[in-house]
Amino acid sequence: SDVCSSDLGLLGIGTVGGGVFTVLERNQDEITRRAGRGIRINTVADLNVDRAKEIVKDRAQVVNDARAVIKNPEIDIVVELIGGYGIAKDLVLEAIAAGKHVVTANKALIAVHGNEIFKAAHEKGVMVAFEAAVAGGIPIIKALREGLTANRIEWIAGIINGTTNFILSEMRDKGLDFETVLKEAQRLGYAEADPTFDIEGVDAAHKATIMSAIAFGIPMQFEKAHVEGITKLAAIDIRYAEQLGYRIKLLGIAKKTNGGVELRVHPTLIPAKRLIANVEGAMNAVQVFGDAVGTTLYYGKGAGSEPTASAVIADLVDITRLLSADAEHRVPYLAFQPDAVQNTPVLPIGEITTSYYLRMRVADQAGVLADITRILASHGVSIDALLQKEADEGESQTDLVALTHETKEKNMLAAIKEIQELKTVAGEVVKIRLENLS
Image (cartoon, rainbow, N blue to C red; front, top):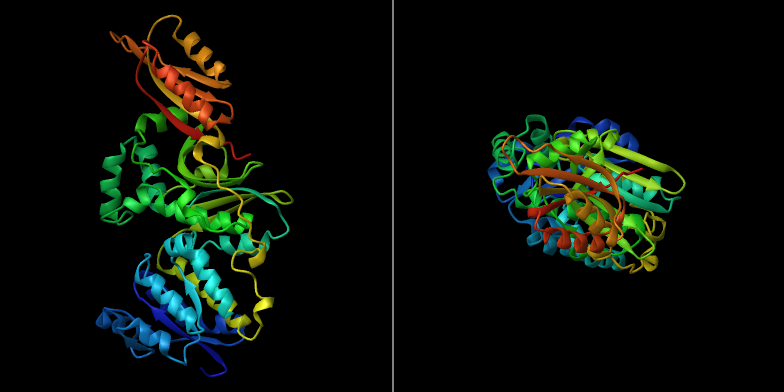
């Protein structure tokens, strides 16, 4: 490519690719002033050639074959915006083998195949940048990798999936159940026709996996993440949580403990007075706790055409600035030097430590509470707060809600099993984890 610009090949020009094109065009002057040279799109590969041509007009070539972009000697940087683990993985590895730098917004690919991709890139001496893979336009990867590099990061807790946060916000606002709100979210375009990855917590787990690797200097270990979505969350629990001063959010949590790393995604009670508890709608937020800096919070749009493009282009500027630097002077892919990445174990869910919200359907009679507190105490679980509802007129059962102090998950499960065997307790005990984030 000519000396005064970086030439890009764009693989895919859907929502994000279109945003990259628009923002690059609109802010070309600013971007050139920052990068020290121009960044221009040389070729776009998309199966839908007609649609692609409508977007780029005559400002770049359009082809229907991604491999033509990878083989093109003029192209310095390949931007992968296809998504998924299939063809995207092959193309990224082929681009690296061809000596191209890679920018991707593909969290699934990085979380599941990142170790292999970074190894290949390291051997070839090329950069792989993925700011757009976590929390859209929020520069959280940069903050973790560079801004907070003096710190021992102790934990990260993030609302990193806009679809589920929108659904939870609506459930809380309108008192509606999950199914009703999901249909509405699909109608408004916040949820996809097949929302599985979002509502089951998989998307958030991809992002939490990436953040855990960068924060703690461990390999990507997505398969060890504990993943729970919001499909089983009941409107009544959102309401009780509110009465006790908490909000329920789907959190991605990465925490360093003496025993290892906790890596988990699940609905979580958070004190309502925390800033992150007040992140509503499709917005994202990530709270990071470092030993030197204390708590920091990053908030913004976690998806969408231009917010995600903002992160992609920041990566393009980084790579452009460093094109002439030798590999040793670049920021390592995972913040820690490649030979210093450690295999710290990711803990099974039974070994994590947190507080809990429990809801039980109990007989409205004397002695029930005493039995429950006795069982909890025998498993080393102490109660922090209780909410006991008056039984409705003519009802013989009532709801009992308890918040516990911190304990190991396996102790909690053993206690719940015993409580469910009580004659005075009807049905399942509902358990939701609680984090104070203090």
